[in-house]
Length: 155
Length: 155
DNA sequence: GTTAAACAGTACACTTTCAGTCCTGTTTAA
DNA sequence: TTAAACAGGACTGAAAGTGTACTGTTTAAC
Image 1 (cartoon, rainbow over the protein chains, first blue to last red):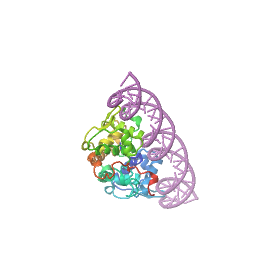
Image 2: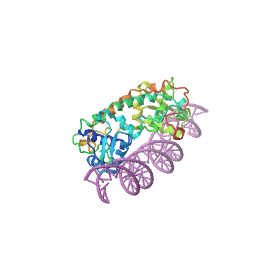
Image 3: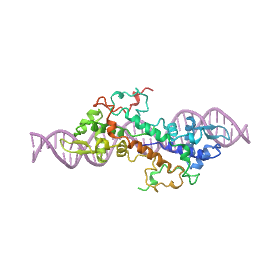
Image 4: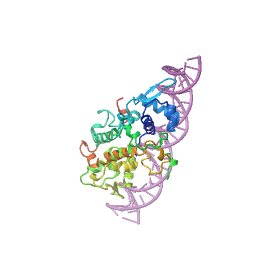
């Protein structure tokens, strides 16, 4: 499996809660944590990170909370992954700028990765948060199932 | 960054050495390790794994070694990743069979990942080993540059 | 038949990364 | 003034990844 971190997965789920709210009202980390049934410290951490990367807007103070910084149609899965994990790429080399790799001039597969990464980037860029939030939500206030605890899975 | 393990990266590079040989002759792990300038134990480990998954054919004994099990045009990057890391997917849930996830029935993004993973699978399936081996090889006997040692990169 | 080269399989130690939590500080509505 | 809520950093335990070593099996060559 090509790994995405669990926090990124959580982040996407949390963002769908914001996206699903038609009024675009503010939601505190506590509310979101309760809704998503995830521990508050973890939710805090994720929302803070997403804010730093410009996907959420924070409001401090007693009635504070978070808002989506952009419309759900304008936020792609690639944006979210980029925010929490850095540029979308499968290998280190294509993340770094040209010339930074010490063995670049003689690598047998140099350049080919660019094409692969570009394809993946496009795939992830084509899926918007609005789509992720849309169809299959049966119970809005429900936990993330993407992460399956090992002990919860049939062997 | 969406992570692929280093061994997978190595594996792809090693396979390109086999693919690049027009005669499809057998190569021992020792030879490949020397050519790729990677430690022999590591190369051994990777080639053994690729053999178990059916991408290479092994021949034991004194003049033994490895061969590609199929033509380079018939081996995709997805095949290689699948062989070393399991099914191509970004999240756990889409790897498991339906029904195995305890929270499946109420996950807000369930099903949407299927689409994303499919897109990525197709992207990786469209790139064949023959393409990876083809164009940019300047010095056939050169090391893998995909992995950039942290200390080798400009900060 | 003996030998040595080469693959097969397993186990292990080391390192790095992830995940989750906690603590202190700042902001702001009531 | 108070308390709710975000900001930022630090820390720890767990998990995964990485590289190596060791023992066993196969087989070509002599």
